[in-house]
Amino acid sequence: MDYLSSEEDNPNILDMDFKKYQFIKFLLDDSSIREQFLGILPKEVFSSEKYHLMDIESCQVNMSPGKWLLRYLGNSGGRVSDLIYWFHKINLERALIYLKEEEPLLIIEQPEPDINVNEGERFSITCKASGYPHPEYQWLKNNQELLLEGEEQVLSFPCAKVEDSGIYVCKVFKRNADSSINVLLSDPATVEVLPCISSNLAGFSRQNSDQEQPNSIRTDLDSFQNKPKKFYEQNILSTNCPESEKIVIVKQPRSYGKVAQGSILWFKCIARASHPVNYQWYRNGRLLDEQTSTKLLVDELYPDQDTGNRKFQFFCKVYNEYDEVMSDFATVELSESDEKTKYVAEEKIAFLIANDKYEAYEEDLVTPAVDVVDLAKLLKSINFKVIVFRNLKLREMISAFQAFCRLLRTGSYAVVFFAGHGYECYGQTYLQPIDCSENLLPEESICTEYILQQMQETRPALIVLLIDACRKRPPELGHRVGCLVEF
Image (spheres, rainbow, N blue to C red):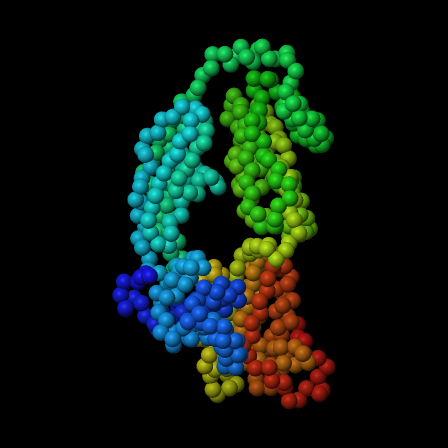
């Protein structure tokens, strides 16, 4: 299967671009991805005996499984096109974006410019694009994004409504491997939905005004009567408002019941009134900033970070200068977390230090700067914000780390990496700044316990502390009581 145009574009796996090689190695170091990848390799390429050989040799030579696997495939004559074919078979888009050649973004089918339909009819608007990485779509109506239902190349309307009339444009975009984004806008499509007018509608309403209410209406009334006292207090303005000025909610937000953690939910509230209305959404009684449209998108819902509460109530206040009403409560309860729970960080941020030129030592360290650069590239490729320092003195290390902690937010993923000189003292690991002496004194160093303590105070969701330093014990410590030093 040919994905690359020439031998120059299709090098041996070991000769591919270094950044691409590192990223593919990083992916294959993930055991779940590696298992999928090995599962589709032909037996003549990778047999079960090779599987055991990988485990043994990668441990013996201190090499990651991903690096061992790439080296083995490269030495066996494997090329980049082979990797592309195999990653296609497991549908791993993250790898393909790095390996395949980019294709320009082009709109190959524009929406129909004028669409006229009758109310109740089915219609759709289509925009198709080509390119690689694969194009994504976002539809806009009158310059406002359509949430959830507007993210496909075909925007469907099963039953046209008058309020569907408007000007529709499709925003097509392509996320490239270098994190850049290409964007194109389609030609506009003007939609007009013609209302269906029934001459018998008014008479029907009058004839049925004195009849028994249907079960669906009685159910709604029962639901209304069961609302808490607070609901009536919030809606007292509506009872004092003239009938002609009242706001009527015609579509209530729906309850989801119990859902998995990390679920994406959306709620809709639509009101009818003789004057323009405003919307404001609330969660557990708290106003949600900037949530002032008919729709509320809850992107990946998790338990409350402060209380651990897994039950939520959402509602919408609809108001204008004449009236104010509250929607029904939409209730959601999160299930217990399990092995399938998907976690998403509030923010991902990394703090990397490379100390390689020590004032007290004649020889410079060779690897810290190289390791920090490589790690920074990998972290950036998975959307970490990366802060890098080189050759810091004690006060500079403390100040830089304290500034890093101030950037952390509750629920963040935090990574700290130090490459340089260090030592261990009474079970504590110490990191040395470049202005330390040769005496391995705790007061001239930073204790990793202090680093962890400061980070934990910000309540991150994940802390990763990576230390690339010696752990040699100071020769004379008998007279010392302890080694923990506060800053």
